[in-house]
Length: 287
Image (spheres, rainbow, N blue to C red):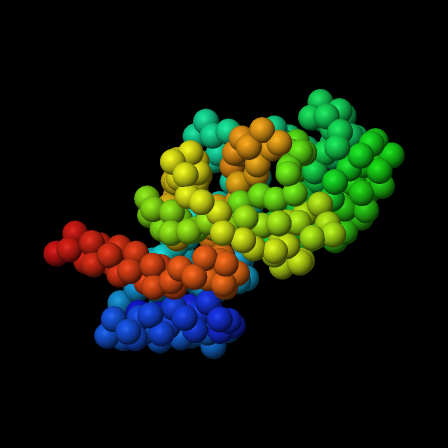
């Protein structure tokens, strides 16, 4: 049976992953979840395993949950996808694991959020609990600005926007780090350098440059990945002016073309090697 690469879009990352499977002589198949049909009465879908590369969080969780329930192992696991797609759940996982992270607060009302902000200390970062690429993330300088942003969020129809996740602002030296973790190994890491914005997301113009993999970086990146359940993950780390590292977020379907261009490391090949090792280990256990 082929290994499914589940993705509604074939970006550079997915194309490289498919090519890496083929180089190893392994059967693989691109599966667009929008065209996938699963009849429960048919039993197990015809896949050896599934590598989840679907960018839609809700669709990824639903597909992975369905495949796992019908006997197809998924990488990453549904529980990992669920946690990583929710910034609050990720923060709670970090907190429970005792990781160094920015101070954070969560409220479900405008006034309680405004009350929490000075306790974190201005400026405060306001984030949606779902979403990526820095969208709808705001840096609040004072109560007046905070009220305007929160009232706007409260008026949005999406109920997830009514969960106010607040985070201490870390005074960064114009950059932070994304580490690509597979299992207990950091494949590579990049600095995301801000360009004309306080946010460093490469999707909004941040520039990627190589970041050395130090023991400290490895420890916190792997611990952050383990806290959310492990797998192949993009771990975002913040740096302060004293070069201390803070666990920030985890992406369950990270883009990595910028990391390839910056580091010249075969990230796709490393992902496939990790996935194959996981699949074979699970198959041995099942015998």
